[in-house]
Every structure is written in structure tokens, then in C-alpha cells.
Image 1 (cartoon, one colour):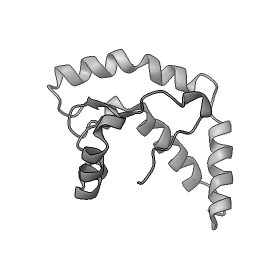
Image 2 (cartoon, one colour):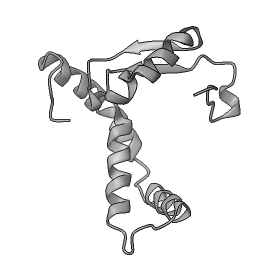
Image 3 (tube, rainbow, N blue to C red):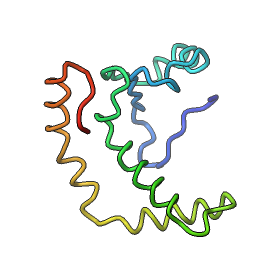
Length: 121
């Protein structure tokens, strides 16, 4: 965690964003200390605690994970895994991401109704 990863050169110069939802990986002492030391390098967004329903990336990750788990034979090397993930990603319908984005108003409303508790998402 010594440098800030910017995946696309066109994003350089922009302030990275970090969404803290108190998920276990975000709350470890090492991560908390590093984020504190580099807090001026990020814009911070505070989300309801452990609320994956607000993060559509979780839906994408789950879909890719399930697609890879169904493969026969299963990936045995890192390259096999990378290929399986790429194949799964390319096999997703083109409107899949747009559909997830369009669910955000419903997700927010459900989270508000549940007062930050679990939702069907």
C-alpha cells in the first residue's frame, strides 16, 4: 500500500475516492493507519456500515465468481483464472451494468426504509 493505484492514465490528476463502509478489510488496523496517514490523498465517502447492497460492484463480483465456479475444469493457474474472468466478463449482456446503475434509486430507498439495515439487494 505504498502507492495509489490509478488504473487509467486519463484519471491521473483526479482525486481518488475511498468509500468506507466499515467492511472488515477497510477497518483493519493496517488499513486504518495507512488511510489516516494518506487521508489528504483521498475524498472520503461514509456509507452505512457493511452495506454491500449500495455497491453494485458486489453484484458484478458475485456474478463473475459464480461463472468461474461453474467452469469445468476449474481454473488451476492464475492465467486460467484471468482467462475465466475475462470470458465471464465478455459474456455478460451489454445492458447488465446499465441495469445495475438504474437500480440505485430503489437500493437507496430500500436502505432508507430499513434504516441502514439489510435489504433485499
